[in-house]
Image 1: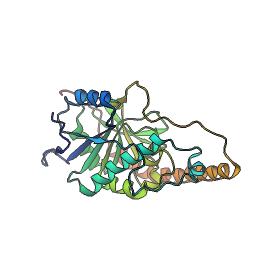
Image 2: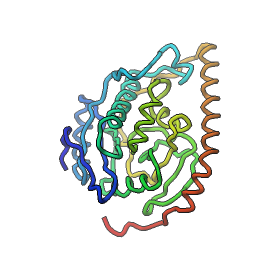
Image 3: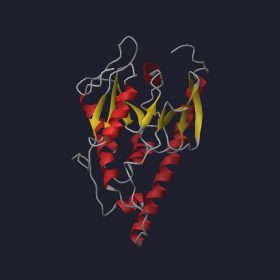
Image 4: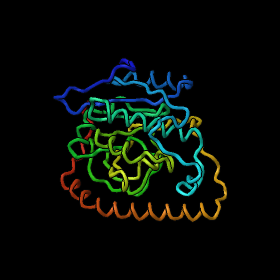
Length: 273
C-alpha cells in the first residue's frame, strides 16, 4: 500500500466509519522507519508517518518542571516530553482537521497483525459508543471481559496497562484528549489513561493485535531521586486524588459494563481472511 504522507485513506462509507492511520517516527530513526514501511506494506489501508518531535514543541502544552515531582514523583526526561508533544500533536491535529471518524496511532516499535480486520473493529467501536480502544498494553491490570470481537475478548480495565504503542480514538475521543491533556504533569501513557478526567473508559481487545518489539527504548526515563518533603507530600496528595477519582469512575461504569455484557457479541471463530 502507498505510504504517502499527503494521503489519508478512508474506508468506503457504506462499509463503516472512516479511519486515519499515523505512525510516529523520529526522522533519525531510519531503521525503525524502514521496518514499519516493510511491515505495513501489507496493510490494506493507506497510512502516513508523523515526524516525531524532539522536544516539548507544541505551544498548547503547559509544563512546569518545578511542580512535576509533586504530580509524577520524579522528573520527566527530554524524550518523555518529546513523546508527549508528538502524541498530543497527532491527536489535536486529527480532532481539528481530519475528515475521518477514527484515528489509529502507532509508535514505530510495534509488530502489527496486518490481517486484523480494522474496519470491523472501528464499526464495533462506533456501535458500542467506544471512543478509546487500546490495541496494546504493557501490563494486564484488573479488568472485566464484556464482549467478544470474533475470537478475541473486549476488556475494560480498571487501571492503566501502560504503553501507547497502538491505540484507536474516535473524533470525540480525540477532542476530549486535546482538551484535558494540555497540562504535562505525568508520563503520556498515564495521562491518556486517566479515564476519570478524560471521560474515556479504558477498553482493549485481547489478545492484542499489536506487540512491542524487543528493542532498546528511545524514551528513557530518569532515575528516581529522593524527594524533598514538600514534593513528597504533593505526590501523596496526587496519588490519593487519582485513586479516589479512579474508584468513583469505575463505580459509575459498572452499569455500562452490565449493559454491554447483556448485548455482548458471541464468540466467533475466524472463518476467512
